Amino acid sequence: MATSNQTKDHATIKRWVEDRGGKPAAVRQTQSDEGAGILRVDFPGYSGEETLQPISWEEFFETFDERGLSFLYQDETTGGEMSRFCKFIRE
Image 1 (cartoon, helix red, strand yellow):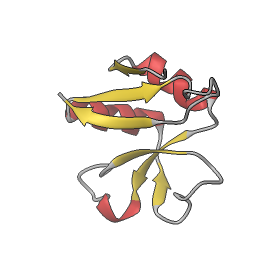
Image 2 (image 1 turned 180 degrees about the vertical axis):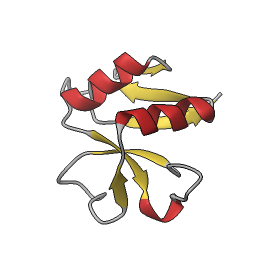
Image 3 (image 1 turned 90 degrees about the vertical axis):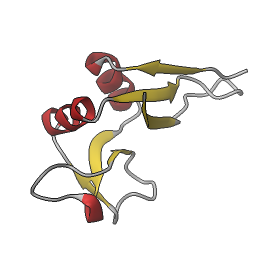
């Protein structure tokens, strides 16, 4: 059975994302002069290519902290393969 984990730790989040080839991003249509908009992880080769805007880790974590978010993620699928499941939640 696959289990999910939850963290606010920047190093854990960055390591998990980069281990899976992901990069910090925001939804293009939600960005403004006031901030990054809706945060996402962009996994190249998947559906986010036209809708996501790359952002720096600094901007990503600044927005993450300001919004009081937590990172929900899964290390492995039920079949034991590396999982890319992740979600940002408010506590």
